Length: 425
Image 1 (spheres, rainbow, N blue to C red):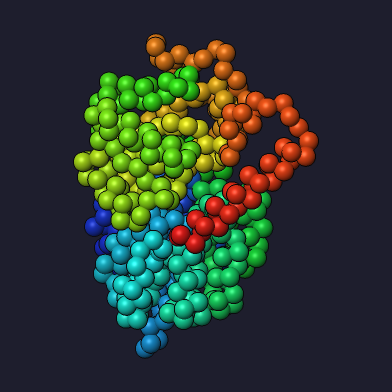
Image 2 (image 1 turned 135 degrees about the vertical axis):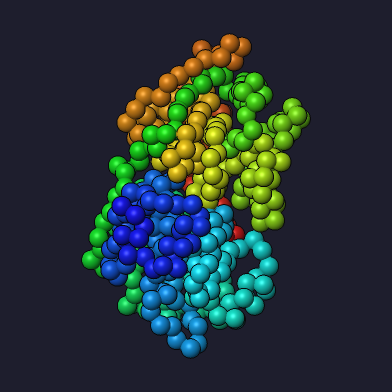
């Protein structure tokens, strides 16, 4: 099948050709026709399979084929969970609309709102936004989405993971009831399907690959290692392998900063990217990583859905995620668009449960290797350290109301932190 056979306009076909694409990916093949028909769509596709084009191409076709009002209201809204993903989607919209008379822009938090407001006042057809900044500007009466014709919820599962449900519900109330709705994501949980039932009208469901499977082009390997030897091992792997571009995931912002400093002190150019970094710092770090001046980008899961780096050869889980699905999203940064990629995980004893859950999720055993001098500690506990829990709490045998209270406090702190991050977007 060709893009031309999908029924896209000549202007879009010209833009697609300029990008060097010749045939649609499976998710594009399945999603574009029903979107062009005006149907609501619930689409599941693992990261790296081209799902962004799966909704941007038919959306742009619709807008270009249908006359617009003299006053240019926001006609299409694409909601994403992170700034990086919002910027990535906006770039795709710009690329594909190069030969169309369609305007677009992106808004997100962490930067001065004045330039965004000035651009909004000029009129915009397609708005790509994170929930926090969108609602903030709406509450200031600086934008209106009451004439939106097409609404896209991108990475819907990540939206829920990050605590955006209430914001999504607020956004829904601000748009007209009659509109086309598209939900795209890497995975769909029961909660996502419940959300879809409240947004989509008689949707057609499309799925490019089995849920939570990993891209076949990605070679996966586990290095069993003592927790205290992880830093030394990853530096050895990067140095001995002469790796030029490595995306490394840590579980916490502090861990990302700490590992980044260790890398730099060992002569490896590195930068960290996470929610506590300013937007300017995040943009600079990502730009350096893409142009090769930064060899290693150390990131938290905020980057798992928002980075689009062609031909990225290596992804390393310095720490396994405690949510199994995040493993799929992390390693999906490599092996994109059919290219080969390598995903390595440094696994200590306390991550044994996480590894077992990941293997169960993806339906395969991952090859294990041990490097001499970096062997795992045979005496280390295999009990996982939960988020917000330190070693003393993990090893404590105390139980009862004290522990219950502590768990509640940890959950409250986590929820408060999540709400702060929501507003930061």
